[in-house]
Length: 108
Length: 114
Image (cartoon, rainbow over all chains, first blue to last red; front, side):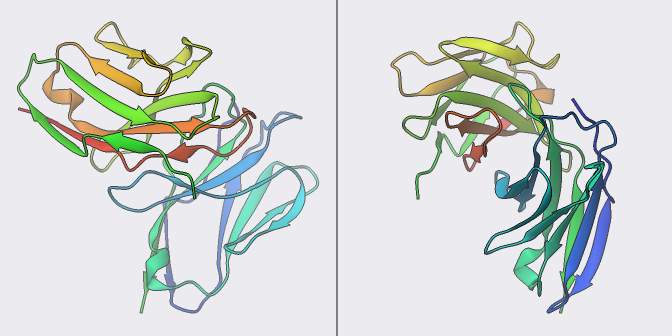
């Protein structure tokens, strides 16, 4: 399983765009990159998944460079309710492992 | 939107007691998981279950833990003799037909061992 590295925490202000980058140097050819969001005392919730280039949905965008050794989750115009822990996961299969995640704190 | 349902939402038990946590998966999902999260720590993988047998388990999932899907719907996690350090949130997650696909998590069961 590819190991991921992401910042422990980030601060932002309401209305700003937030970019969280995850490094995954050992990503395998058939691995997908998936991001989850977790609020306190709740289960993680899927945000977005991609394999290469750019993926966009109603919540976020995911940018993946050609070498796929990193990925960037982009949250446009964050609000206070986006304060959460964001996890980058690579691969999965029967043993999907969560790292420590990035704790995003959005301030007014 | 389909959801994973977990019961109980909170259970308090005495050390040494048996606990069963229940999960109702999203129908037609094939892969089932249990994770736990000790307060303030990261989400830890416990076990995965497919086709009525364990697929993978972590070192946390020792002989005190077991899983089953007795009636083809509920997916249960049993802790035979609880310890203080078993106090945590336990999350059930299910996945459709694709192992690379999204994991759907329940709201969790908070276990407090006294």
